[in-house]
Image (cartoon, rainbow, N blue to C red; front, side, top):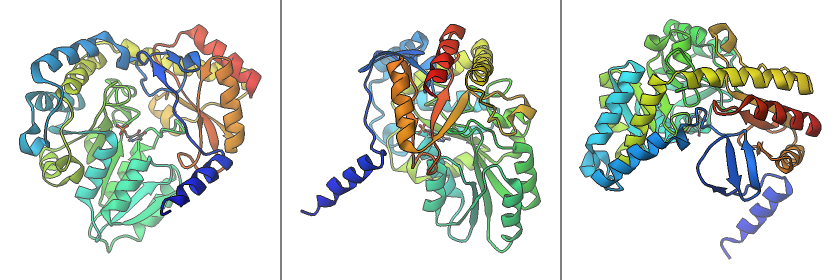
Length: 393
Ligand SMILES: Cc1ncc(COP(=O)(O)O)c(C=O)c1O
């Protein structure tokens, strides 16, 4: 009786084309996937460099599995802190050029833990309206006053900052590369504002780690502002090809998070085999920059194909171009969820997997195909996909 509302809720989701279902993938993640709908070209993965399917990562994990077992068994602060966790954190800090790093079970938890450790009810936090859900949830959970500013609009941000001097702390949180729009925050402008109004900056590089910047450290690297950003968050789950999230910054910051981030303290450490895979992934990111270059080349090429095929200005790079950033995320905004589902369904019939992204992941009326290019796509695959998109759109 008490759960009768669930059937109503499900019916409502179905009626508004917002019901979600799984698609089963057989075999490893790669540019071509074996799915329950047959073989498809994968144009929607965050496995940007193809590392999730690389044998080096699987080999590192299997050696670690035999040596360390399958699980950490407890919170890192109890008996779950294994040598591989520390090795991974040293590796991340070295890669990011920071004093220290802390690994969380997911990027989502890294954002929640970092934000709620640094601000509370006496503080105010400013977030881009299109920030990822984990940043929004972290802001809400912190108990701080929350002000959303218009997407990428630093004038709107400054307006709010001007009126916030009576709060104990001010904090600005933003995605660096926006996951559903493929555009990039103006990190120079943002850091200048933060300095002018004495605000803490937290930048989520989830989609930029391994992808953007000369060394693959992200958008802050491309804008040369790494040393001016207080807290940088990354994930091991996208270009790094594994699972987990991390925060990098000063030794004091990391010591504080280890002692106060509830999403770190009250959860089990990630499995040691995942740590080993992630270390192998950072080795590849550093020693094989050609994948990052190929990703940028593919992203540029696919934008050209789309612009020829559907006349679309698939720019959407925000301030990225100024900093020489070509992002692998290309949104084709369709509008209503029903139409986005239709287009995605037609593409699937043509062997191309680009699921419709619908509310609440994106704002109402902006359902879209969110394309993400991989370094391992061939030019032929990309030009064929653009031709199919032309037929369907
Ligand atoms: C911008 C952004 N931040 C954080 C996350 C969460 O990362 P994870 O999948 O590691 O939890 C995601 C994606 O899921 C994301 O797109």
